[in-house]
Length: 98
Image 1 (cartoon, rainbow, N blue to C red):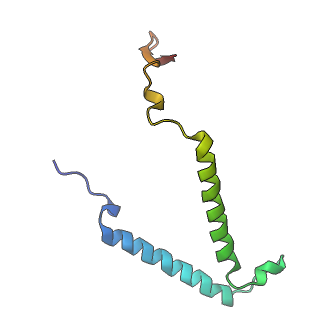
Image 2: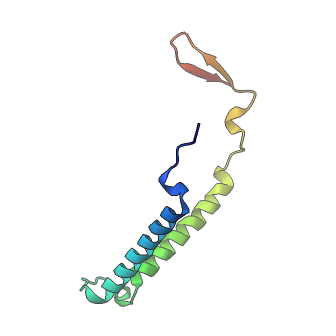
Image 3: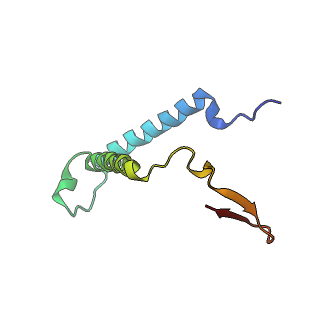
């Protein structure tokens, strides 16, 4: 039986999405020169401020996520430990005992 092929299994479709993303970013950057903005903060006068702001925000989020991984990460077999015994109760639900 052939596996179902998804839209992003074809590398051409991935490239199309990336080109669309790059095009949208370019258009939005070009609109930054045309559209009048109601500025609140003087930093908003910088060309490409929102692009830089968004990029820095994403980088900070990734760095925070990597830091949080150090204390939130569990072993690969965390839910498959032997001391966890699955019992099927009379009410039809599953109960976990340690």
